[in-house]
Image (cartoon, rainbow, N blue to C red):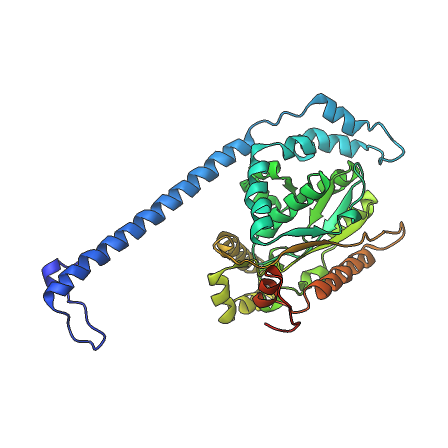
Length: 376
């Protein structure tokens, strides 16, 4: 940095130098603001890292699961209404006791109550949030696989989980990417579990409401113009269909109206306008060498996940719609189950979000104003 006496003087709009007295007053103020901004960024970064470390340690602390809860899961009182407990289930119960925490343990944890206040309670006021169709959930003790689309942000995940808990008194279990779960083990106290087939199957057999987002991160990164169009990965992902068929439970599609409009991310907006999201999708879909394709995919996912939280709230009306259960026939193929689920969810999106990605209709609904379909 040049000494102050040798620094060039700031220029006016007409490109002429400012008087030395004015310039000497501006330079210290500019330096002061830059120093304050750097200090603020450092403080926020330090606080975020420290919070994550504390939560990481908290997530790895031993979970106290009562023997009565284990016995109730291994030997249900009413065998006629509950699937038989196989050896694999009992093995999973012993290997992953934190996955099968009771609704009481999870729902009463300080972290779950904090997340419920942060997302559900605030959404009730800010977004006039409501849930419709809660009667489509099965009765307590019976599991169901709940599927939905993935938004460009992640706020709706915690809002949807806590909203379903408020509507049913049951803590839904969300199947999370295994790597993300390892980095955030404390999320088990919010009802999130590793996204593995056998884990989902055993949760459903134990009578838990279990959630899956088959579109995954690819669906979240496909751009605002495709926000309400299910991703192509729905055509080849069959894991959720296998889980529902093996567990012999219904599939319930759900959709959160105006979910993508409830948050505005300036970085995502710019990337979408510049076509970066579309270029990334084409690059990932192109035939690349295995290692290179894997690196590009994960570079994009990590970048998206790290910046998805940097968004501004928008006071649009948000409504969680619970669809009709999809019954599964014993001899139905997983391809048929997956396709029926995809079509049912896409029909819900078309019904409740006919105007696509648009902020004005959601704002009009929030203010109880007449909404014109197609108005953007």
